[in-house]
Length: 209
Ligand code: ADP
Image 1 (tube, helix red, strand yellow):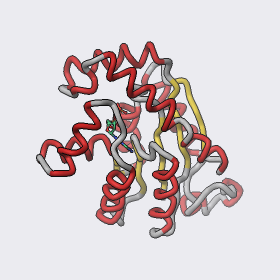
Image 2 (cartoon, helix red, strand yellow):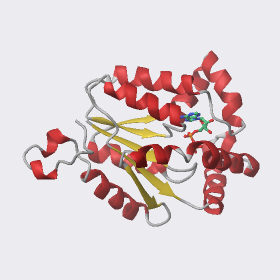
Image 3 (cartoon, protein in one colour):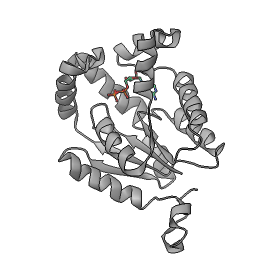
């Protein structure tokens, strides 16, 4: 399986690149933000609790998002792989993702981080807020809070994958298709062992089935 973690601060372009990646690699897109917003729309108790935190730019508790990912993996056992977008956002979430994917004899292939400076993020998110209807995109103070939460709580997840030689980062400012091309270049170096079987030299220690 090909399991990609797309990483970066809010507004870095993870959603845009995810849409292009699922089409190219036939992967299932798992965005914890989208899953949470769907719970809000359905008016579930989980959604109601999450909404308060999301509107404030705070993270929802690890066990909530881990539980959602666990059931999504169980519902998609025949998938060619996954794009994780907005997850993991904390080290315990990253550890859980390793444990959950191991159940299916797979693991995270690589993490790709999109780097974008705060002022550009604020500009992009305020622009998105004009049409997205997302309360967390419509207020500069809340946007800056989300960036701060990313820098203080989430950025350390990069170190978790760097220790496993799975971390890559790219400049997230530029032409969307150019950035996509660079992401594909990284992914193609991490193709799972099954798809490089005819070329064993292409398989490396860091590639997991
Ligand atoms: P963005 O990356 O633009 O902030 P997301 O849609 O990924 O947007 O997330 C929106 C909000 O949902 C976050 O600010 C947070 O409150 C919550 N959320 C999403 N994913 C997670 C996660 N993995 N852990 C905790 N909270 C999350």
